[in-house]
Image (tube, rainbow, N blue to C red; front, top):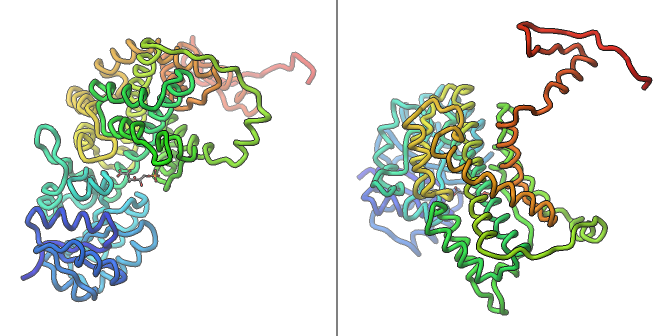
Length: 469
Ligand code: 6PG
């Protein structure tokens, strides 16, 4: 009997997805570039619906047509190499699916490359880590729309289900759209995590709270509008005791890694001319956290004396700042979707994107329902912050965010995500941002022209030298 789908790559994500598919009644062929992982997988986690293959030809021949082959392998060269190994073994109309964190530009190229040879290539964003892959991730497929129905039943079955029972999987758009949406999801994940880290830092250093108090605060927050996977696991982390005494969190080196998707998002946003300052700030915060000169800088750059600011009011101001920062981070990420949708002709459905982030993925949160609602009300919404629900929240919390930013600056606590959220709102709402002077300077030194407040048209001024330089 031929099998429903093949999975290439038997590391943790690939094997968990294969098991997830098998649990949902699909028959799965599995293959890995080296036999060791496959052997280990079928020995340790056997499943009636899963069959292992050790040769690529046998693997391909075991599949129903059109064949569906999913890659869960390292992004980059290995994907190109696997495509090239498979194409000679495939037939017209067969389907390749890349479920890794591939760069969307690569996916666009691969989509074209495969299309020319009659093969359908899907770039599929998958979020949710190991548990998500096993129990239900959020899935973002991009590729040929006409053949999507071939793979739809499998992915809708294995995807996480939101509270209304709907699968967290929806067709995103052509070529690289799925990987693009996943990339920006990760960018938002960076900003979300940075906001959470800054809240923790403030509670610990300015508030002077213990880990167990902070665990309680986060647990409380998780009962309300901040309810989300990341806040929930942060509460768990603060509560985790270390075998050597105290909590594990205090034993972890204060330097964060990154694999690149956040950085891709920032670079892409600069290209698109979209301000995603919070995501960029979150990337930079990780970079700064790794600087070896930090220990030296601590002794040579002066800073303020700390004073403690404790109390319910302070905790509530941090909570409100976190919520407002989150609104801005998502507004920035979704602005990038909007711009990309036009640039790459994807016709992205922002409300649906938010709806498949409701469960399964790392940024899953209560909050995403509100984003879906905002776009349902107005699909052309220019920026999420102008949806009435978010606007009311921003206006109710603006003072808290400003207080927290001022306090942190006064206390010398780095809070780049909070500060950039405030900057973004201020830049939006300020009647004057000083850009008239930028234009004047450009016109002075380069005749770049400017527009006038009182007359239509484009002007250049003969600027005079009033002072000796
Ligand atoms: C997810 C995560 C996942 C992963 C990233 C983290 O959605 O499941 O985003 O893709 O954890 O690799 O990225 P960094 O290593 O860059 O933090």
